[in-house]
Image (cartoon, helix red, strand yellow):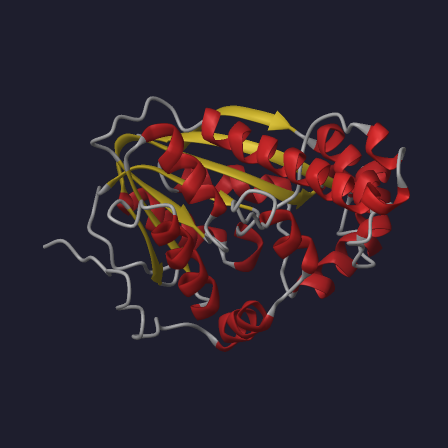
Length: 289
């Protein structure tokens, strides 16, 4: 039996823990300009960081348009990250179905829809995010294929083997990985692909650094050690086929953001953690066997 939640039927709240409720409350009320103003550039609202070399010339030129140029460049870098993730989803046909787990305001789902022209389901425990994302899909005229649901990624209610690919983009630090990957092993078709881009703390550093602890407190999350991803994937029939260290690639984004009007106060902490080796930014792609 296929379990499908259609647009507008997200009223039934998923079963979540008290901690998850605190996370949902945070995102239900979040109006951070670093998420909203970047999305306003072209309507792709992302909730993640960027990769690639920054165009530092945006800081030069007329002062009255400097902010606009900088925001556009930060958005270009975050779009490059979304495209890089989509590059690793494998061969996707229009008949396939994808899951954007922890979808935020829906930017990644819309990127995948534009590229693959297939069905995409996005899930979040934030009612506000789900409503916003569904409105974006409607505005783009893709709400017949791209739908967002109020669901817990640890217990989605979707049917077994229903997805060709699943991804998390900077959202795994909010959940227990053993439960998460068990759910994905259930949801993925045999040979299906799982991809995550995530921050993780470096096991060789030892325990989480002061900077990692500060990031946890800032985002109400629990950053996992790098080793936990591979351990829990192995326990749940997910075999890594690609691991890309994006730490150096994301530093320009953070350096440019620190010089923008969108600073949140966490920028220097990220840069210190990346540069002292205690924190890493990885892409991991794995196949379901």
